[in-house]
Image (cartoon, rainbow, N blue to C red):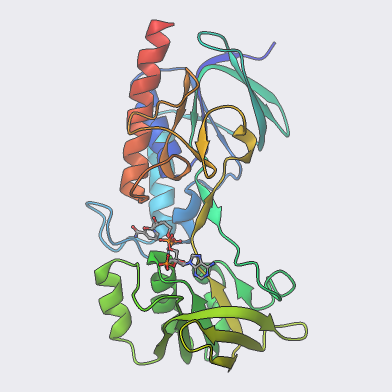
Length: 307
Ligand code: NAP
């Protein structure tokens, strides 16, 4: 029979690591299951983080490592495995986490699996992925030195990506479907100050073309209907995120794939808590993810005491 942990935390981004730190302090017998041995989640691919208190301008990768080091220092236990599904025995009963490698059991669970990049779903996107189409500017930007690239989207990630790419690309187009950006005002100010970035407002990408590698992007203006073909080598897609919750279908109530939970992390399933980007919430940031981890452990502790 598998060892019965007090708590299993699934995911090792800021929410999962925040929870791991609080669980160690609460002396709960805890296991963190992470998909890859490099902790940090989406943070790892963020070039620069300028809004985490006390660490202005830290690289996302360094912040991910720091969070992991902190959990390690407190003695958190990690397993590298991919969760396939969860079986819930009900209130007070063990919860079984069935992974690709092993099955683990705990009295309580914190789901902190975060989110992944959303796809655009246009012709050429899938065919040319990795051949000029990318979802991660910090990972792939260096391939486009002195070349032309486009970023699609108008949120924090799209604007951050455009700023990052402008340092190495000769020209960057930012293609946004509306006439106003969603990104933080400070990011917008940095973007507007760059003279090799051109913003194409009210524009949507229709197809990505090229034989073996990206050569052109077909766009269309949603107000005028005007179509235009941009000659370029890179297309960075930053149109939002989608929650990583497939393994939890049927386990707890969800809303558009996000696990329904308040700030306390309490879901519709007793003993199962949600933290970070995977839960329904207003503000998805590193600071709110880390705070979610702390709150979810506090709720889990209360549940474990009661059961
Ligand atoms: P986001 O804030 O949801 O923005 C997605 C952008 O893509 C929006 O501008 C949206 O347009 C556009 N979009 C969505 N679907 C589209 C489609 N089919 N075609 C064209 N455009 C489309 O997503 P994100 O930028 O990936 O950020 C994800 C979360 O992480 C957000 O909560 C963000 O605040 C957070 N984040 C925080 C930081 C930070 O704190 N430093 C950094 C990065 C990200 P509309 O504006 O018209 O909806």
